[in-house]
Image (cartoon, rainbow over all chains, first blue to last red; front, top):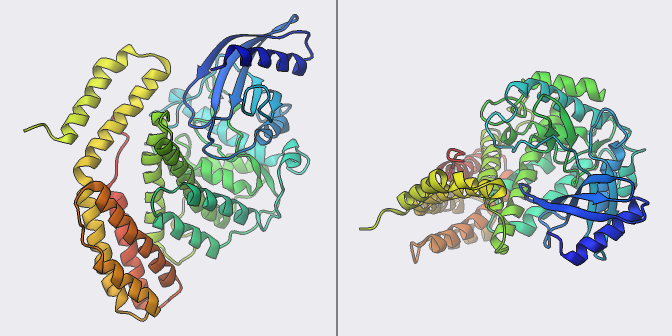
Length: 348
Length: 148
């Protein structure tokens, strides 16, 4: 939560950002549930209006190193889009001067909620409608002009032939930095991925980086109100997002794509909305990559739980259950097909 | 005789779920749900982890013995023989067995890297054996979402 001094400084900071004479911060409360950033909800009162806002602040020791300006730039890339709903970005502070750590402020979307990824049948009777919207929005993200986006100004754009190696290098580094014990399964997968580079995308795309069930707001009536958690956004191969969204970890118990649609239907909607062809070979590579990326994320959760006496139980859960699931996916796949084409036996 | 660790943790998780969690709201209820799963999974792990670790160590010992008799580069064969010689547990505590197993897994990674570059049938057979060990470890430690 915020101290009285921090609340005061935040009010002054937001007054400037909102072009208001004064800004008073009230009704501050913490939103729990995420494993990464500290998230607070509050109201900002200026002489003219009252705004419902969300503040996202880096934790003292961050699990996955990200830059605030990247998430902010990703939101700015879509905040005027009618095809990709996102919370409106309000202000970004990249230094420690206001709240001791970098943070950003976005508009709050009321009357909408997030369904946790492992809740059985989280969308009930609206499952198919939300699923269709989910894959259409993903397609719309990938249809956007990446080079002209705000995100392009905040991140380095790789060449189409290098986007896979940049991502693999990054997540291999996260595994090296966080593993508490040897990781023969993930390391074998990394070597396999390096031996079988995927085809380069015809056109680079904005990649959300964590597009999955549990990372969007919906109204419990079949509509998606906002796509959240853009902190891992970058420019790269759109199959990366598609593979992550379709990862079996997010499928729940019904085995459907993201737990919501038949695979072919999901991919068809994405293809139609993105204007891109589904590349089976690229997708096969990125599905194995997704499992490696998952291992990296879950290992960083386990590390943080291990090192931080105040860590939340969800970190232990992620570093145990989720890690086990991705290790099993990799081991089953590579044991059955240690040297053949990655497309053999892949999803879809 | 005290109740078994698995029994203690599972029963405590059931009590947490039935008698404590209903009185909680918001994030505390979410934490209780996660803790319930962690206690149940910890109970299962407390019961089976030494057995799984011993099985992994024994299987890697057999693999290393087989691999050390092949035409792998000489220093790797020496490393594998050394790993086999040091594979007798000095203690059966989970931490000691885990440390021993992790040392062998580090050697397994080196072996896998060598085998992947050799297309001879004996190398493919050893590689498959390595994957069997890794899959066995994952499968025998499987925990489910039941109880969450």
